[in-house]
Amino acid sequence: QDAGLDKALIAEAEAIVKEEGPRSQARQEVEAAFEANTVDALKKALEVAKAAKLDASEIKEIEDAIKRKADQEKFMKEVNAAMQESETCDHKDVDSVRAAKEKLAAAIAGALSSGVPETELADAELRRKKLHNLIEDLKGSIRV
Image (cartoon, rainbow, N blue to C red):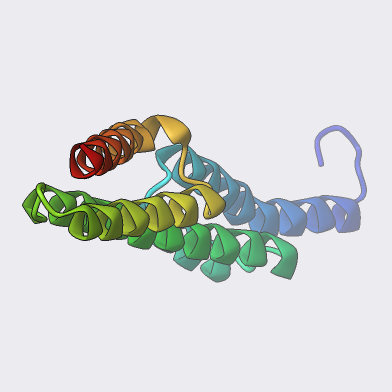
């Protein structure tokens, strides 16, 4: 007002700032949640985004990220379970080792398809290779 601006223009600008302030803060929280990359952080960011009335496309992006991360966590649990199962299988029986290797390979493939980084699957892939080599050794000893 002191600068000689129209009161209606000032009121309009204040209304925009009042509406966009929480949205801007919500977007910052969403960005931090994406960096944290955990389901809990993303769910919290989703609540904040909905409260701030962000666009439907922004909310859908967060929901998709939550689903993706949940899928990744589910597949990693499957990989870990297959790894433990492979350690307890009968290492003298070809069929038992083969079944463990196939289950582990399927779990690894699922995890990769869900977007789990290969670096997180390095131990599982190493275990799968060891099982493969064990199968070859057992097949060789059967033939001899």
